[in-house]
Image (tube, rainbow, N blue to C red; front, side, top):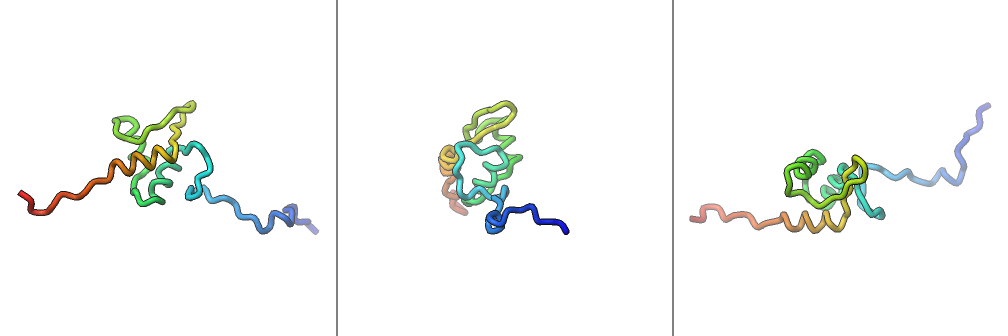
Length: 93
């Protein structure tokens, strides 16, 4: 008979879901996490768009660590808020 190798104290614990970064307790987010972070806050953007903006300019500030782009949540918030604008009036001449 095989014994279950899991510790009974681990039975009630949930694994953190990598697809959600709602509770940010880390200083830096990688690019795909930054896209998830912004989407969870109502700013629709993809990882590919962040990559393009990093190359062409106009994206949120980031730092490099080796080959990884690292973003900070406060800077993502400031950048996203700055991109919001009032829509143009329809039919205004």
